Length: 79
Image 1 (cartoon, rainbow, N blue to C red):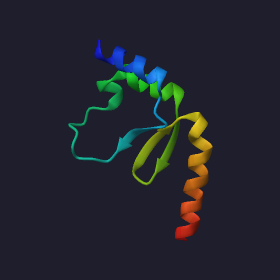
Image 2: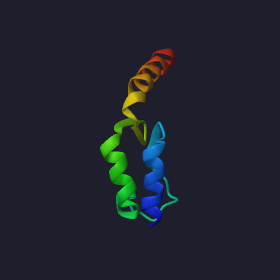
Image 3: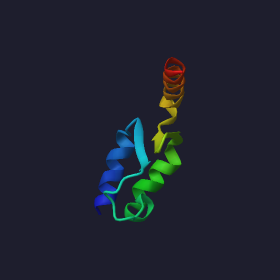
């Protein structure tokens, strides 16, 4: 199964950030949970959700604080 092979690779080397949602017209409306349920479950169980504008990111727990600090710094600089 292709999802199981991908899941095995993700478990060995998880990316720091996963794009969970972006408002885009390029998809036919099927959700990631429906299309790739094993990969979606892995991400939902192992990452922390973080919203930036119209994007929903899933951030690895060991990277979450660094992302929060940089996001706050960016908003302060733009204010």
